[in-house]
Length: 492
Image 1 (cartoon, rainbow, N blue to C red):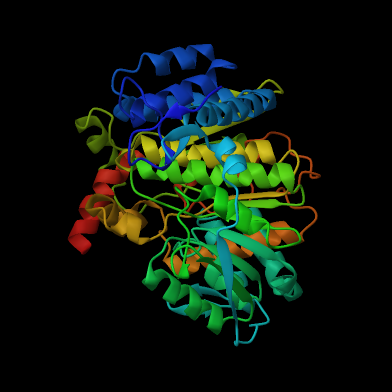
Image 2: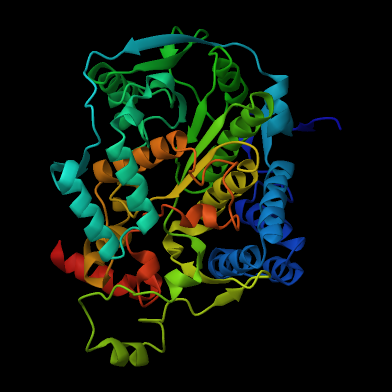
């Protein structure tokens, strides 16, 4: 197939042309429909006929997760077909031509980057310390906090158990034998700070912005590991790389390092650009897994998505928020059922007799592009885990800049504690999730390992989940979002 022609000035990973324009919603809807068609044609039909995708996508995400939960075969087929749908449509443009992103990596994979290396001068901390409300939790104090989080339904017991194992095996935190390729290295939720402290070797990929690289260099100097940074030989030694336009050259740079690599995708962008970033990163992951089979993969799954969770969680004790107990029924009645909607209204009976509830924590304000970008990562995790170690843990709601700049979401996060949800500070979340990543790499029995028996692919995201309490509410999180936002505004 000969390359298509790109519009003048367009370059890098792009949405395809649909009726003469690069339509994000048309493409996203087509991807989800193709993903569902093989195992749930009725769901695919509902997606195809959606008149307002920016609104209808929330309900269709629930339908898609229900189809995946019905059987392990469905989950694998849906993930594989979803990945295929994305890569059949998204394109890479350069020099006036458009080709599939995967082909671009093979076509333009030429050395462009040299390497600047910063060796840390700090000392290894020697044990796990998780910052929490301005204080590092270690030893018995950390153990007690893990117990409280489990009792309050903030994290699953498997999450606390994994963190206990890391705390009890401090030698696991000597990461000098591990090399991590961090895409979006400076991301707030990324593990860069913790991994540099623990002595890891880092291949840092992020955009060309001096403040970003000043921060990365600072972390590198303060840590006990080594950070390698791409230096563009065509731009007077500028540090950094553009994931969207230099995907092939980034892949070539990775090959200048020997040995196994753990590639983690932490890159984020607003709106439709997030899908483009996710596709570029996925193309890197796909090529690394195929050509370097000792590669491992790391993801953070968003808590504001739809997850199939096992019946014991659905039927277990639910956290009750402090606010609104007396007014719950009247408010639900007055709102026409939109407030305090019971959680887990939909339960799926899987082919093997197991039951899954659908934890719907989607926040519509994040939009369908956010949903597709995060779902792409989940699809890759499900497919890749069959052959390579894949760490994919649900992270808690966190006060990142991208969230807190949205006035409504910021207010809802400020008021969330009254409704049974704990929202974490950035340094708590990224240290906790980095420790879970180390657990997945060090513990041979970790669910992340393909050799570990997993009853159902959807269980990959349930194990070690740190959802902040969203899965153990008695009502759908979205049905108290407005109330939490009102209380958050009052508090502020």
